[in-house]
Image (cartoon, rainbow, N blue to C red):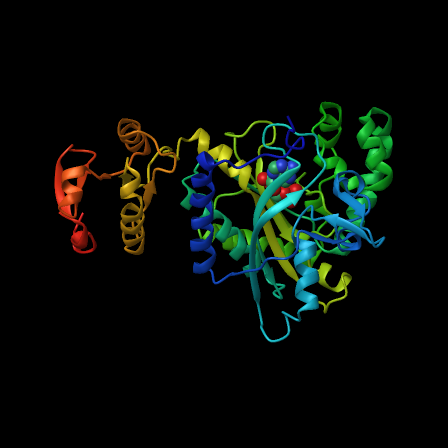
Length: 415
Ligand code: AMP
């Protein structure tokens, strides 16, 4: 038997209502904030990601699905959306005639990670990007949007963690101090952090390794290195969240994995998840659009993992499965009824009803059992005497009540 690729998952019909539930709320919330949907290709030229996410990040170094296509071009299955979205924004001049560009997306992403609960190699993200505002109000707007979405999904058990990485000057000052501190402790770092020390020392702050954690605890904090502009931005974001009643915790070691972030970074975590407790995260990326060849436009965004949202919602028993949508099951156990059965089915479907026909040519009894199992509200039964009177029987599956209805009157009957 051929199995699905490790780390990928079928979304089966029994689970699809969960996805629809989340997608409906996403559409509703993004509309209220006037964000417009964008869909970009699943694969891009590799440089879209390598030039933006950073050559020394885990994603680019270890996790990308990259291959040469038959024409010899290096192609990558998108590991995240922001870089590809910005490529599209630049290519299609979307920032030209609008002051603030508000976009959202939902789709599959690919990372070669070690699969575990809540961590897949093909997973789905919903996210938003707010482009062309350098102001803290934009940071606040997307955090508010995320917060609304989480609340509307019915999730209350979560924490919003925020931090600031400051502007380039602050980050570079901090990086020097951090490297100075880590140099003293270098021998005690985990092997992974030792290699990060050479390539991307800020990422050491993200480490979950206990040895690293005790060193990180006493490391200098980026927040103490913010220059005036960066401090002012962060203070404003916090004030806006305070005044809109959004609860948050300042997490001084939160850096997020990618190179393009500056100023505000944030993450949503829930104790209802296991080790992978982050279900969303984002931040400001003021330099990225210019870096990818566009105009100098600041931006801020976030992404949320749909599979992790489902894990949380499952643990809260939000979904009530097995709810049947079937209105009519048509029982027609003789070939002579088939064409009329099909005609009636079509008429009912044109009236927006959900109708099932037996396609197995089962016996009358077997079809009645099937009708029961389908959860249909009504069963339409073809029977000899009634059919000779140009009628069918309609059985209310809840009450068991049966009534005879003229075939020509079905269209006008209130069920
Ligand atoms: P990131 O930008 O990497 O923090 O990703 C944003 C969100 O996407 C995370 O908080 C997760 O909910 C989700 N996510 C990221 N990687 C994976 C993965 N490999 N499997 C499932 N969900 C993921």
